[in-house]
Image 1 (cartoon, rainbow, N blue to C red):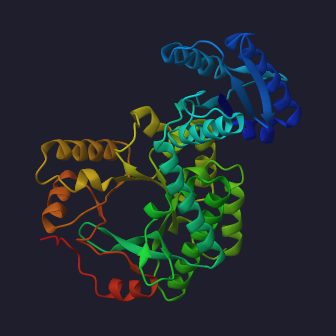
Image 2: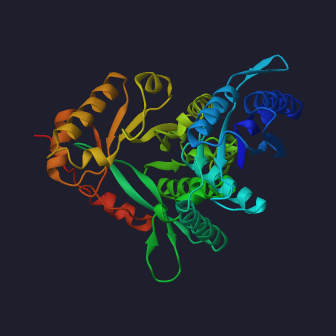
Image 3: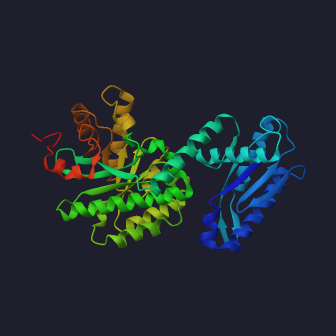
Length: 399
């Protein structure tokens, strides 16, 4: 049993209309019929989801070949009412009788495997295994935790300063935290990361972060402090068809807050999930005067072409590389390479995870011009920021 879900189908409906979506579904159904043959059963379960009962082949290697061919064929462009459109597919597979012998259970397990394949990056397939059950439980717990936090207003933002190497405080990064209300302290997003990939929750959480961060920036501005506010945007929220609507709503709510003091932090890997859509969205954001930073840089697979095309003003080098630059020549070489490339492209460079004066000095030698990390300041509640700024002394002083 397999479940096949189309990636990007909603965007086709939104851009070209439901008639175009229907034409696309029919074209892809014909392709699948040719790929899987008449000995197997293919049925549309609803929306952009199909169910497959594969009687043959029996061997896993043969199934691998068949599914790989299917993914390749589905991702080929389709002409729809005069336009070429492209989608991909994600597939989850369960096996009879090793996984289950009940049709409903086989369908559920295939759906579980399909969700795991989407989490892994889409345009691929995953076979069900028992470990997915435990993982699904953690995912469900994270989603439930986030739903409760939204309902009970228990999400909060803390802020970590960013400073110029030899000078003043440039701004802060807004960091999402969850207060369980049980005296456990604040939880970071690793405890509810599954909610940030949930179609509905990702947007709700993203809207909360946008509003709370810009609102706080506006309060600081009224007190005479012009701090750039970095706001983390999840991949799911960024690629949501209503994301720009959320951005315009924030700008309308806070019309007096300078747009260049808003910096959206997007992980390096997020745009790669749907590069054309991400480029269009990020260009629209830039056109509004909002800054864009590529966060966790170095952890993905960005190429020079990728960097050249993305409309970003800042690169944030991931702390996993910065942390060991004093003892690991490979990490040092990576940071030096990223810094050199960013300088050549005219981008601001931020080093995350700066933990000591030694780190700051080495980064200064590499030409990194903005620092963030425990050597500068730990994250703190909004009410502590202005006092910290007032007493801040540069971590490095120019002679």
